[in-house]
Image 1 (cartoon, rainbow, N blue to C red):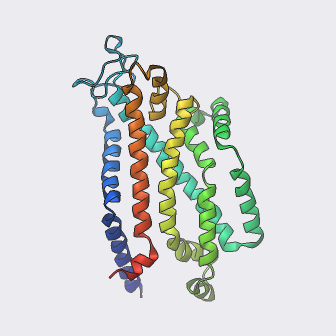
Image 2 (cartoon, rainbow, N blue to C red; image 1 turned 30 degrees about the vertical axis):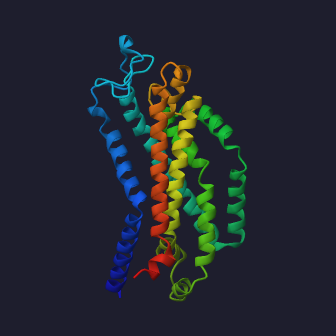
Image 3 (tube, rainbow, N blue to C red; image 1 turned 120 degrees about the horizontal axis):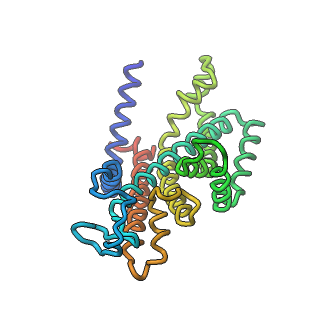
Length: 298
């Protein structure tokens, strides 16, 4: 029985992977995202540093020495974008992981147990949904930076925390809806009859059937997190200098947009490409995990 289950799971995994890469744009998006991640990881290979200033070379256009030109302080924009990609991608990934994890826990408990547990958790969720996100992000960012806690002095950590705290509600509501449907299925009833614990039923039987929607939701959350971080950094409430991010590079370019438009163009292009690739990956995952297509495919 165990071998049969393993074989079925492997067959399903192969089907999902095959269907994902049939979505051509999703396959291309994975390749582009891998290039972006590798470029960010190997940013140290650049001959410049993100804070290195060359006043004599300020406002240079693209050249062999400076591929994306230089800014008002003579800093190499290509290098700053590479290092900024590290921060922006890390914020997007880690804040998404935290928000999805919290949302899954809240949604699973709410949908599985129902009753007063569901009512309490959903009222808390509704309360968080009423918060004016951008104002809360700004206030939380300013407040946490003033706290005398060493690890909160890192503005990257602060941005990850506040984005996660204000974005777990949507996956929580989605997971709750899935659990409300799945908890009534025959395989859950059979597991209860065999004496399965609540934890085993949730983790072993119901949650695996929610993986597809959770992954799709995660891609949307990550794209939104990158845009949020860029917006916060652009407003000056996100990751603080001298750490470069795509949003902070855009912020420094706003006064030079007519004199040196390339300073704003390249970080904006990187945000656009990254968000588009993540969205296309989400589309591919949605098609790959479509249960009707998977079970009817020959």
